[in-house]
Every structure is written in C-alpha cells, then in structure tokens.
Image (tube, rainbow, N blue to C red):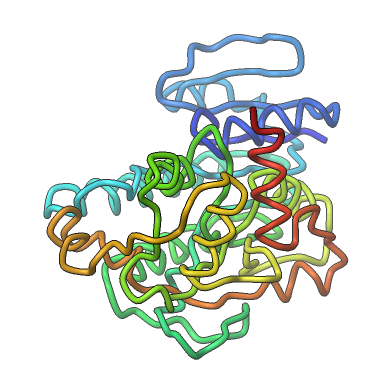
Length: 299
C-alpha cells in the first residue's frame, strides 16, 4: 500500500512507519522537521512543501494524521491553546491538500482519544456511546474529530486511543519509574479504569483500518480487557518484580500536575467493539501479556 503519515516522528508515528515499511508499504512522512527526500520506500516532506509535492499524494491508500502538541504537560492557558490549535491547524492543512488531489486517498485515519466519552467508574463505553464534553480533554477531542470529519476522503476513521504501552515512549516509562525505585502503588483511589493498548497492536490496527473498506467513523484503539489503576499497578509490579505498596495521594498529584492530574485520577472502561466486529485480532489482549512482552526477559 501507499500511505502518508503526518506526525510520524513521535512514539506511535515512528513505530507505525517502521511497521509499514516492514509490510513492504510505500510511506510518505510529513513532519515539521523533515527535509524533503527519498530513502528507499520512505519519502519525507515538510508541511510547507506538501502542495509543491502534491503529486506524491495522488492515489494514496490512506493518510494517517497523528500530529499535535503533546498533552503531557501542565495545562496552562497557553498550553491549552497550543494543544487545540496544533490539531486544528494540521487537520486544515490536510483538508486543503486532499481537496487539491485528483484521486483522493482511500481512507483518512485521524488520531483521537477515548477522553471524548467522559469518565466513569461504572459505565462501559464503545463506539456507539454518546460524546460527552465535560472537561478540557474531551473538548479538544471533539473539536479535533469535527475538523477531521471535514476531510474530503471516501472514508474517515477517528482512532480513539487509550493509553499506549511501549518501553520506548508514551506513558509507561513514567508509570514504571516508581516501581523500579521500589515505591510503586495505586494512584488516588485505584478504582479508576485504565483503557490501554500495546504499541504493536495500535500500529497493526491503523493499517487494518486502512485496508478494511467497511471500517469508518469512530474506532476505539483499546485492548479488549481494560483494568483498574490498582490492577494495572499490580500487574506492572509483578512483571518488574517490585512491590506494589505506596499509594500516590490525590492531593499530591494535583499539586504536581495541576488540571492534567485528572487524566490519572479519572478514567473510563472502553471496549474495541468495532475493531473486533470487523475481525481484528489483538496480539496482546490482556495487560499481563502486554507487560511481559514489553519487559521480558529481565536481567
């Protein structure tokens, strides 16, 4: 296949490009820092050069948009503006690019997040659940999905991602650090749900969505077995052979992270109903399997 990836230098994007190349796909990387050129099956182009190179984007099987300012920072007023504007700007740029193409890409996959469902300790969410704009994160996701839905592609897929687990980036290294120091434990009450997915499974799911003509709209990129924060911590402690004993109090987390602490203190139980209905098979369906694959063999 021929696939363009915007935001392909981050944790998920870099892994996606390596996976697509291993599948023999032709890949175009769009990045702020990219210098235009061709290396084997990979072409790179800067955002400002896309219109000049638009012939590269003709007859794509798919475009994947993972661009946007990281949400893993203190949510000051200025940071909030950057987080929202970066997502709306890249969606608008891609809409202009796709609008200029003679042959539209078969699918447009846009990064999103399960935060759009709101939070609950009791409710279970799938792709049919209503959108709930209840906090900053859900507002960001709703605006991002609305902008992506305006892309003039035959199929738009809104990839609602949970916590992506991998040793080389994302949240897991920070979550594992207290355990490695012998001071790990539940966060807050520990009852909040964690909907997660192994990094290998999310890149496989992205490609699966592109090559599956009947997949469109919201797709939950989460494993089929979410866990509570306390259950996740115990699985991580067991895998790392470290104790699970020292709780992180709510007030300390709010003091350290401000409003962003809500991401760790609240959660949602999200199921990948659409992916499973369309035949996608998770390589790592349980958190124990995922963590063992990431950290084994230990020295």
